[in-house]
Length: 96
Image (cartoon, rainbow, N blue to C red; front, side, top):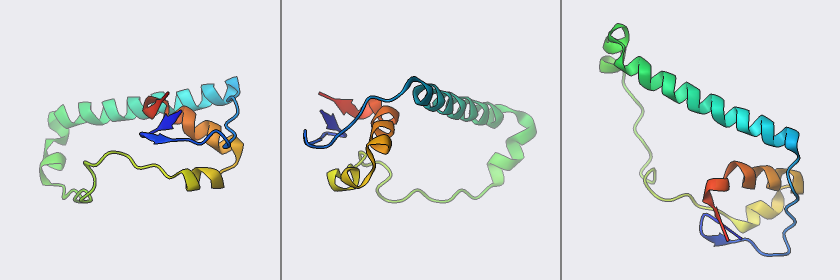
């Protein structure tokens, strides 16, 4: 199994995630998606045009366009409970 293109050694225990945690993390993901959609819609609303035109946004860091990085050593420091959740949340970046 690979996460962000980095092989996860077989000696790292990653248990199955329980259904309650899956539901909680799925709801978190869905609420973040809804919040992003609402923000995008508010950008189109003429009532907020002045704000989006005049606000000073913080610049992105120089590495913002680079692919995600992943450290096996940092994964080892997490509990198996946390590892399972990290891999579930990042399931789009997990490959075989």
